[in-house]
Amino acid sequence: MPLRTPVVPVILAAGQGTRMRSSRPKVLQPLAEKPLLLHVLETAARLGGTEPVVVVGHGAGQVRSVLDPACRSVIQEPQLGTGHALLTALPQVDNGATILVLYGDVPLVRAETLCALLEIMPADGLALLTVTLPNPTGYGRILRDDEGRVTGIVEERDADAAQRALREVNTGIMAAPRARWVDWLSQIGCDNAQGEYYLTDCVSLAAAEGVPIAVHCCPDIEETRGVNDRIQLADAERVLRARRADDLMRAGAILRNPDCLEIRGNVTVGTDVQIDTGVVLEGDIVLGKGVRIGPHCTLRNCSVGDDAEVLAHSVLDGAKVGAGCRIGPFARLRPGTDLSAGVHVGNYVEIKNTRVGTDSKINHLSYIGDAQIGNGVNIGAGTITCNYDGVYKHKTQIADGAFIGSNTALVAPVRIGEHATVGAGSVITRDAPDHKLTLARARQTTVDGWQPPTKLKE
Image (cartoon, rainbow, N blue to C red; front, side, top):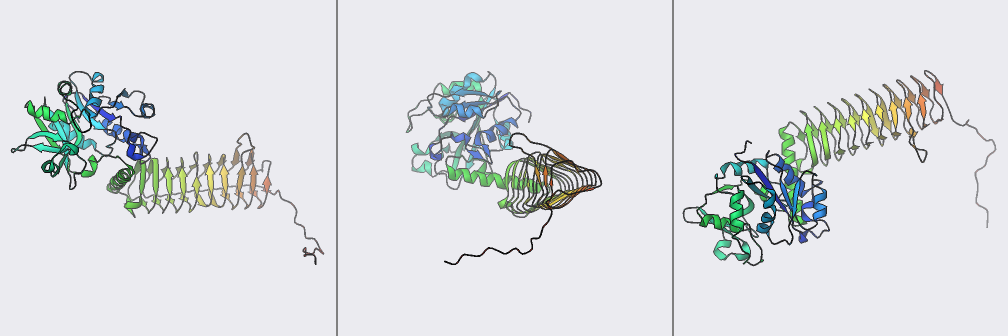
């Protein structure tokens, strides 16, 4: 959005949040695996304005630790209310800028809503974001005169019965030129039930001075809800989950149970992706066209190629899955797994730090770590790469077309040659040559006359 003047978001994030019952500041409570404050910062960044200023207070060191080093922050000490918090931030904002006030515990507001608010802001006036609630308990009420003009905001604890009956409430989000904030903040006092400097008092001052006040009533109640306790945090999680699920469906995905899809990161989907119930998507996820994800799978920082299928109860973490692969059920792909097209990884198979070539198969009960596997390889059930000697990791190389029999241990470092066959039950400690059968197991013996043990008579 092209902005008329430089816009500086000031994010108020100094509160303790005692109702959270947590050692962490409220704005660091996790929403979709990310602190509340970072959701607000990401939204502010989408406005395309100036780098925001974050007002910190309780747990300032913890809060600053999650901020980008380039992000400006100031400490509010002591913490004397929202008006005092904005006053603390003013020295960080250049003259001539517009200040947009945001809150570190209001994580669901959309950039589009903030743009709409900034667009209606009078050139030298105030813009308020309000919302109409069926139950306005706990919120400051918007006061209007007989002609509908805003005359002020009254906090619930300071409101009379008639004012408490009003349903249009203050979200706390507002914008005005810096010079206006300087003037208003110099006039407000703390003669109220909390003994704090309310930012909302600036609205009454603006109305009394005849400053134009524009109001944008947010059509989506959920965008403006603050998060003050664990119940409200769970509600925000529900809203964000539904919002992200809707985005995936608009992009062409089929969700079998949208209410049971957890999205805790950035997900990109191709057309005709199908995602079953109970799936968790974390971090950066890319799903190609026609990908199918079975029930109760977890994917974290993964890419899955076109027409690949991940069957039920599989866990993929930091893996790259090629087109047409078939994974699971009950498979685990750990970081560094790179599967080429057409690979099959079956039930109870674990792979890490391994590249698997085209059309290779590891179908049952195997562990493959620190390996390089060629094309068209078949690895039998119960195969393990013995890659760790207690100090160092070692590499296993399996060339194109090799066949590894069941219950085989490959003791790295070791190489299995092209189209080599390793007999079932072998413990391979030396390289196996190309095009030959290699066995390494004890000779089977039958002992004649052997009798099973029996209990001695007492």
